[in-house]
Length: 119
Image (cartoon, rainbow, N blue to C red; front, side, top):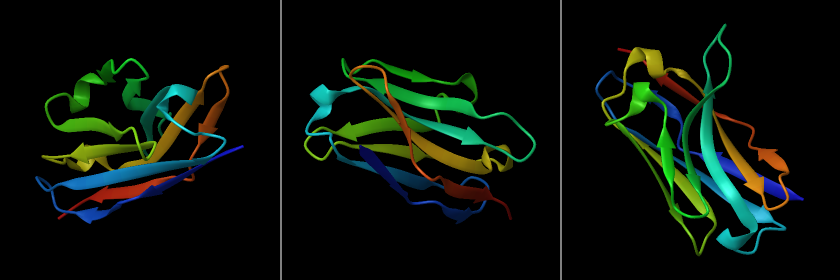
């Protein structure tokens, strides 16, 4: 089993910044055990969408709406992934979920972190 614990959500004004963290534990011993880690978000009344992902190889992908504003990174020793969010907009308001796909293709999800961008 794999557990994902997210932290760093909260309320921020438009133009502000937040940093989300997702720590993986359980049957994950190194980044070698992981195919990809990423962040998804789901706004009220909308479908969950992929925001950013980082593959074991280091290849990174972003949804167009966050390019230039969000940065995904990882700490290989801690099997932790981060999402630095700058220049936040009200439309970034959502619950952000950490996702991990383990080698073998099994997906795991965190419980979510609420990000609210409002003045």
